[in-house]
Amino acid sequence: MYIIKVKGVAKIPDYVQLRDEQFTLLAYFRVDRPEKSLDKIGLSDKADYIMNLIKELPFGQIMKLEL
Image 1 (cartoon, rainbow, N blue to C red):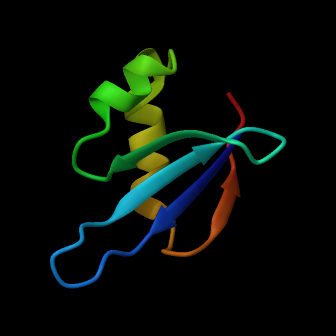
Image 2 (tube, rainbow, N blue to C red; image 1 turned 90 degrees about the horizontal axis):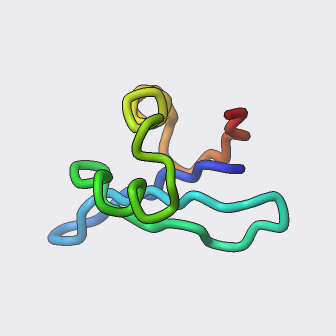
């Protein structure tokens, strides 16, 4: 799975994309509201771990997520 952090501009907030190995979009959520999306794809138990990685991840970079 891959994480991409996208920088928002003006009124558009920052977003995060979670993609699988084939780069298919699994989840797309605001940085400040991840709960519903992570729960929907079954990762609510790993939300704290994922959000800590997202906080450290620079905008526009892709990070491979090992769960």
